Image 1 (tube, each protein chain N blue to C red):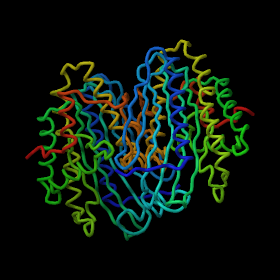
Image 2 (image 1 turned 180 degrees about the horizontal axis):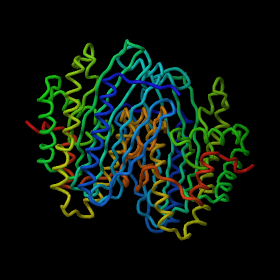
Image 3 (image 1 turned 60 degrees about the vertical axis):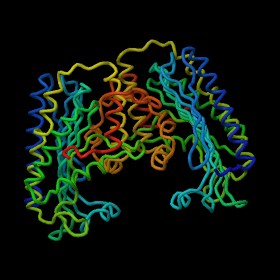
Image 4 (image 1 turned 90 degrees about the vertical axis):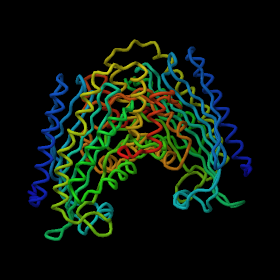
Length: 310
Length: 310
């Protein structure tokens, strides 16, 4: 077995993501009250491994997964070429979560923060990426505003994070071209932070790292208050049916467009940790038309992304 | 508006597929007894159009779609290069169906037959492709044998169709690498029939056309007897739950690997006609393990495809 030692920054990032995973799963399980997270440690045969934590059939959370991985090895030449820097050796660590509440009034949420090193020996390139986005089924504008406010505040504390840019990047990334819709009401998204140069991202890794710590630490502030104020809202059968159909769009995005999912599936990632992002129950109806009211109201903002803080 | 006139063979193929659609939907609706097929005629802005027929919430068929299209125009250079022949103009017509019965004892089925012409003016290449595959949730070996027998008989009536080759092609095509499973118990699959040459397929288009007519006309023989003998079998909640989880694999195949689906989604096909193949209700459970019995028995044959007529 090859023993791999990440750089101190890589080790620190991995530890940060593990801490974030613990804090988030503790808070969500405590709010749920009925179910806790099942923990799966797993090894990646080619190097590294991870810790997947999954909640199913909770009072509030119908399904949710929070995964941390730290993997290393050698990239394919084709994939290495797509990434910044030279060389093919890599170390990657990240925390990734998707939470699917049962009540259609409580939005689904996704967040991911990651750190990568690529190169051979002392000559390597490193960067952070990540983001968070909110997917309501029934739109409460104040929830979208709250979510964006938290991310703006985190960005504003760090000169490397231009909130307006990260917000637009999010709307561009979480977009389903075949539906002409964004996945939800957005949030933030960023990548290659720390590489500087041609990608036009910040170059100072220390500053970027402080931003990522702050952002990852902001997730609960961004999401929990929304869950708390919507969890007891009564829902109708029509709202539930709408949620299941809209979850279908979530699946379409993840399986057709999401870079991480498709890359993971096609290159031998741990399938169950990749696909734990999929909702537990999903519906597809032929040529489903939104009903006037909360359904058309949601589609309006998905077809024409809004700046929620403007 | 550009008026496009397909070659006589193209027109005949389109008419064949429309006739097949009518015969199949008539037979399925008659068997269902509760619901008939809703008909949607649609135009493709860039040229051509289609007729989608969909059944939902039937007694036997929970969701099913049978689509015929005939479209023409100009292919992107990249896509044109992947296909046989020179030029970028094309005409394509096909019939495509996916039927999702409600009862987990009745298998899901898919079939598709298509004809393409590609080239400029008199200088064009034409070919047929297609196939049919059966996806049971609870395996009845006699059903798999029956399905394969019908396709073998159709192949055996035509020297251009080597059944053994088409059967293996089907197992290779309907394969989910990330699950290490075939989608179902197979059937037949073929492509580029009529081009001859380097793809090693038959060159005689007349003979191929007769085979496709015969195969498309064999669908009801292959599928209906199975529906008839399983439709009244009592099912348990556990069997239904298993069906919903297994339908998730169907979605994964269609959205991640199926060439037609992914190509359609990314190039502006009619979304509702493409995605009518998705089941109406689907479940994903984290790290779902099959129970010993009918669940492990099914997985065994999906992980190790069988020659059902051997």
